[in-house]
Image (cartoon, rainbow, N blue to C red; front, side):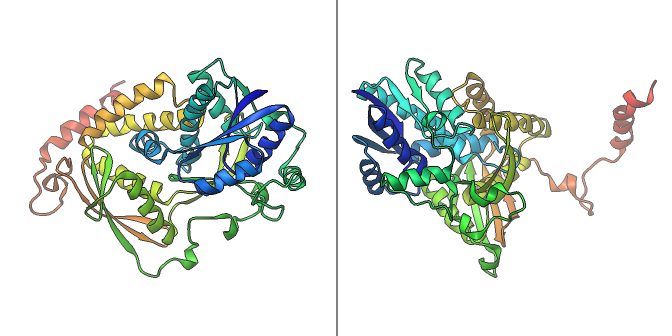
Length: 390
């Protein structure tokens, strides 16, 4: 009997995939990565076996995810189309890496995923798998089966007594990990609909956030978040703590019309409290310690880095090369940023760094001004020269 290793999330699509693959004559081995998902390992195991899987591997990859994927992305300032911190996109290459490893261990010639036939994740998974092991054969049930929409999938799951949580009344597609939550489908597909509170699973609405602001001091060392309110934390714990704090303050919601890899536009809503807090603090620290030419160029690097992650090219040579530039400039990015969180806003309160390029004596308009104004006229004449001497 043929054996296939399925990337299993516990959701509607992959639960249906198990049953469908079995009907096609496959023994199904599931692989689930704990990246901070909504399901516990015991629930994942129960759901996979009840759905018909022969075996399931569950691996806690939170530490590798945070240090090997989230941290490089944070340092790079990678944001897709200004609103998406790439939580789901960052998890896919890591899952693909272990999907390939389990296939090798199980001596399976096939791997499968439960990604939509018009979505981004099919590209991310399959590109990563092809880079890591081009000999593996990939099965994408959602591109092949007769289940034409989520409503039909729900009926199929109920008919086959598969354990699912979604319903036709709340048919959202949700992907959750430590770096954020991606939410799509259902009423969100109508652009005239405001996202309902039931769609969000982390953050409080602004109406329910505290009436007083909360202050946070975040300390960085070479671009890496090191301390929260002067307490040293490993990055997994720090992100978890910031998610709790930020969610309570209504931080991190975005609503995006995004351009998918396959060329269509879609509407996605995201929650990323910790991500937006850390990104805002790190960017502010970089503005303090990096010179303007580096900052200008980093904008281009950030856009490219985000595009590579979004398009499933994490294992590309270009992404690895860009890491070299980022690690070099982050050597100076050490210091503390104090933030005020209030009603969904992240406000800069204090900045401090031994590598600060800000000099009060040059910036001040007061009596202790050290700037030599006599230089200004000559500078302006030279600056304007290309545009005035014709």
